[in-house]
Amino acid sequence: MLINLLDYDRTKLEKFFLTLGEKPFRAGQLLKWIHQLGVTDFSLMTNFGLKLRSYLSEHTIIAPPQIVTRQKSQDHTEKWLLKLADGNHIETVFIPEATRDTLCVSTQVGCQLNCAFCATGKIGYQRNLTTAEIIGQLWLAERTLRNDSKKPVITNVVLMGMGEPLLNLTNVVPAINIMFDDLAYGLAKRRVTLSTVGLIPELLQLRELSEVSLAISLHAPNDELRSQLMPINKKYPLTQLIPICEKYFRDRRRHITIEYALIADINDSDLHARQLIRLLSHLPCKINLIPINAGDNSPYHAPTQARIDRFRKLLMQAGFNTITRKTRGSDIAAACGQLAGKLQ
Image (cartoon, rainbow, N blue to C red; front, side):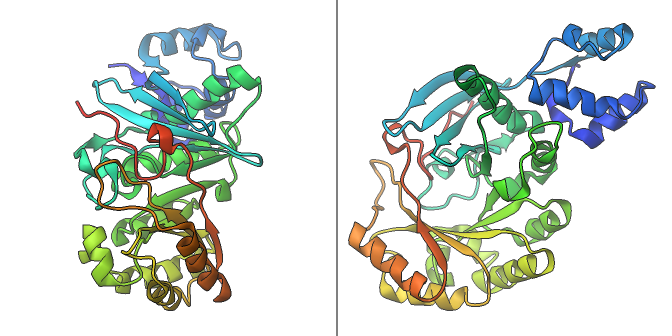
């Protein structure tokens, strides 16, 4: 079976080259060929000897997912439907802005958490993505967009697409390592963010494995309401999750963002804002308010702009750095909570 070299971060590549009798520095050379230069033809890797190039050609491949469709929103957001080797499909979203260009990547085919307002959970769960399928989304984005701009494009990556990243740590962490690696994408740690509902054991694992920035999908200021919207809260309630987040920040000074999807008449009242202020009173964090991006058949709807502004004002007055995230790509179902893909 051919080895997909996109599955390997620097540590794994060093071990791989050692088994071939090669020096570990070959790992950095190969990372640069693959991720910075986008070269997939081993014969062009001229700082490798002929014997090594021949071995790589016979035993390894560089195989990202395949782009099936590429949709462009009126606001210039792009959504790509990507086909995997087993016939499943995932979605990846590119969000261009004046000061940054963000790629939203998926980590699973589907999702088993079944949050009430998320389209991904409604399609069910198939499997975890491999490291190659995760980093392959960034590899594809750089290659595709660089053809348009003639220079590297992606400045930020958010693991906020399909799936719960903490349920796939084995493959997610090496992909993040490649994003950070100076000989690959060289992204700063504050520019790569992992979004999670807050699985406590895996969150504690992540804290030891990576310095990636953290976003907690909160969406409710009390356990009763959050359990209605997010069933996982029954297992890991806010009374346990928030103290873990406080420790996560205090011990390692990581960047933490709280994501709060505003849903009309569900979690958007002044009372909810005051409860959120109390809940987060000891957690240094930024709060992203996200007007809900519901599908056509969803019972949930975004609040009025006046209600959104009022909610934000209360948080700001309490001293929280709070922004209202602009809805991007909703006309092509590329906004937060709308990704679905296709399960085989």
